[in-house]
Amino acid sequence: MTHWFHRNPLKATAPVSFNFYGVAGSPSANKICNDLRTTRARLLEMFTDTTCNPEIMKNATDAYFSLLQGFIASLDGTTQENKLRFMQNFKWTDTLQGNTPGAQQDAIFELISMAYNVAIWHTKFASRLEVHIPRLITPAEKGRDLEPRVIDTYIVQCQAEAQEVTIARAIELKHNATLIAALAFETANFYQKADGTLNTLEPECSSKWRKYLQLKQHFYMSYAYCYHGQTLLSSDKCGESIRSLQEAEKCYSRAETLCKEYRQTKGPGSTAKPSEQLFFTKLGGLIKNTLQKCERENGFIYFHKVPAEAPQLELKASYGLAEPISFEFPVLSEQCTPEVYATFDLTKGAKDEKAKPKREEEVIKPMKEPDLKPQKDTGCIIS
Image 1: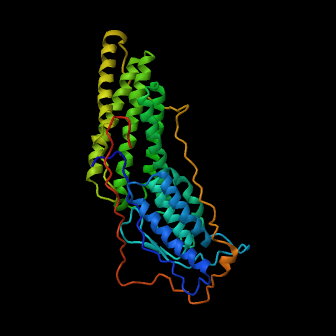
Image 2 (image 1 turned 180 degrees about the vertical axis):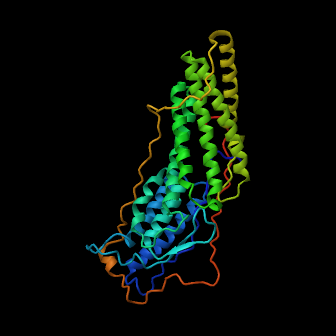
């Protein structure tokens, strides 16, 4: 199975019953608990359903989150914490830490963890996740999904991958080389930034991810130097053009090496095979042909000296940059009224949901993600 993008696994979670016997003191309160259980199960199904599309995902997410916020938002007109926030224990794995879950008895932990999965499924939503994290009672442990380094890397990777689509489209529509070089340069910088964010994370959980980010950085630097070389040639700067294309060749060779290292590196997530994609292999041919053309013209026409140093890329795209789409949580469910909220009585038979110490380390079965086959590769359509 060939992929262009590296994907860490979805977060897995233990089932949640929302059985608040004795606490839910009215039919309406019991209905909220039942609906929470069914809408949560439905949303989890959508993560692995190959027929799910963004509209279906949004509807499933809204149905669950609108009810879950009844355990988070203040419903009694005071500034006190919602009395239901700490009623239920939730267990979630982390994308880089295998199948051993972390647990918090906190509805905000559930909201963030589930939203994280929505963001992984539909990555354009990722930049909105951080606003709730400071409210958590239990701080994120090193290397866990809610730790700033991991979140920041996901966000920057989302920006970079969205930008890749823009580059592919610009190439397909034959936009000018200056714009393509600038877009590629900024995309390479995104990947470099993402890799730098992970450089202090433990190698056993980050090495594979970092190899992916590094290979993408060098690949798009190769694109930037290649198209910058075309721009220089069109300005009759043949010697500088040759040097830029030589640097493109060097970056491309490094990207090929990193592709091999990436495939051989063990770690969480799927293994992409970008070097087998037409979009990757076409660049190698483009660099070679353009460099040969420049060298021929320099030998017959320009006779320019080739600089020893590669040109400094100070490129800025004037347009075409990908913009994030804002994600907003749904409004509170109409079922969650102050009157229904008042019927939850925490003093009557609340089931003890606190995480209990166990002799053996608990493991949650990972989500079985669909084995999606890639579409026909045109060389520009990259996902």
